[in-house]
Image (tube, rainbow, N blue to C red; front, side, top):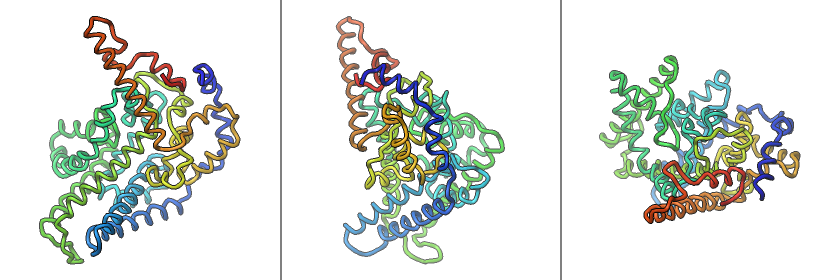
Length: 392
């Protein structure tokens, strides 16, 4: 596809026309949210019980562990919906989600409210957006570094809430550090979160206190070796299984995140909403495995960026209407990827191309020739071509 043709499709995209096709789908269904979340948590709890206590073959325990990881992963993704749901009318759901999922998983809802920056026009894809890393415009080893994060996030979260959080309540410099550098569920570890209002910090402290109590409570139960009330013994491999479960959930989320965008921008540019949409990806054809690796509507990520307030249970219907109702040359059609494998392969291909350019530039520089890359990233023509939907 020619660059000017793609750019023209982006510039002529009509947000009003798209909204008109889905205008009746913006109301969330409380019954769907409550039933989906509670049933998912119940499945996860039963599967976890089978994986840790039930007698049987090793294969059955592994299967139970996989089901548990998928269920708890789906339940955790509801934190994304909380950001976009009306705060007053969904207060009960937010409280229950935090008590059943957010606090036990050490990911209370306050850690994800920086997600709104990911949808701001002036922030998306820039250094103010913690959910964007130019993995497709950097050497390929950055992808491996990113995928190492799940192995460290769990233990760091335990230390953050059990030790650093209570210390920060009496140490203002540490408090400021935690707020800005260790209070955000984002993919970029260098992200600096803006300081919130004081009233918001009270909610943060409450959720932190609950997380702190939960960690020390689990530590006490493991030390005693007996589960309160039930009197059941704590398995010796309880903590290793908890760690593996956290790694599995975080790895699933990391893979999903890498398939959400093309990740090719320099992070110094501001994009229009149409450009943000085209930089995001839909996976509508992944009907069987898609809800597993991209649950709660995450496989319609480009559509979500187009209309962030669309509830997850209406995204499939909205996508079908847009594909049927928008013109054949609509920029929205550029967002569709046939599969997760295809998306990840393209991300890897872009990163490998940058790696090759970096090696070539290094060899030329060593030979006294000015290379095509600088420390700021790949050549400008690389970004320009990818900006217009073509490969370089």
